[in-house]
Amino acid sequence: MRFDAIIQSRMGSKRLTNKIFFSLGNSTVLEFLLKNLKKIKAINKIIIAVPDNVNHELFKIISKKTMFICLLTIQKIKKTMS
Image 1 (tube, one colour):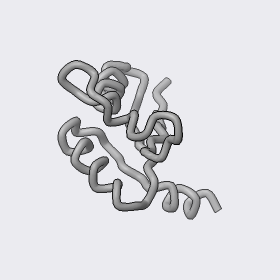
Image 2: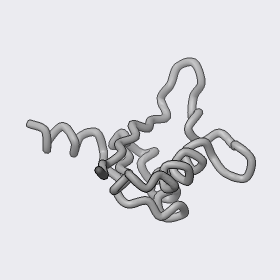
Image 3: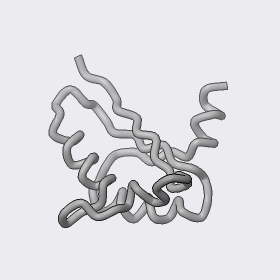
Image 4: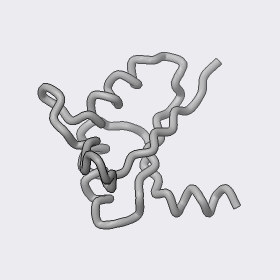
């Protein structure tokens, strides 16, 4: 059985701001997570849900670098679910 993985990712944490972009070796935490999720054969596609704001561009850069399949803003997800 195959399934899709949805990762909710944002930068507005109060305790540890921008933690998803912290360095972890030669990559960011998000890149590390995506690379490891790609290794799981049961995952059909990886979807990253991000806020629709100015930081959205940073997620686009990482999406091109890691070549993951889909980038959705939180607003688009809410519209598709209603």
